[in-house]
Length: 103
Figure 1: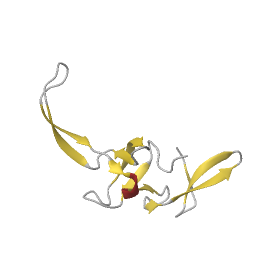
Figure 2: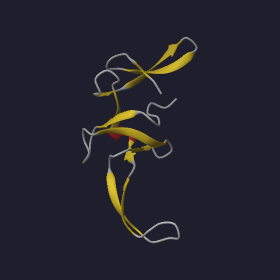
Figure 3: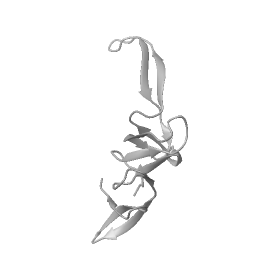
Figure 4: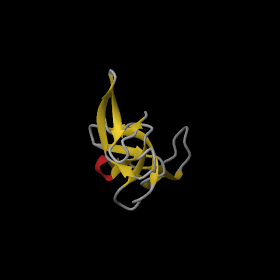
């Protein structure tokens, strides 16, 4: 079970976007990276194709998992993630508040 999953609200810990929050669009576990909406935005020059116009487009670049942390469900501050057996299910728990992270 992964600590950070698609759809989680995360906080950026380091880099040019430090302190910004966003939603995880995609997680790449083999590369230990994730795409976060509105964070680490880069500009790319796009060549014209049959179905896409040429020009400069902005899109999110991936960010390393060590540079992001899950936002605590209670106060939105960064927290570490633990695991707990709840009945017959394994659930993610915020270390900061003890709340279950739904997802």
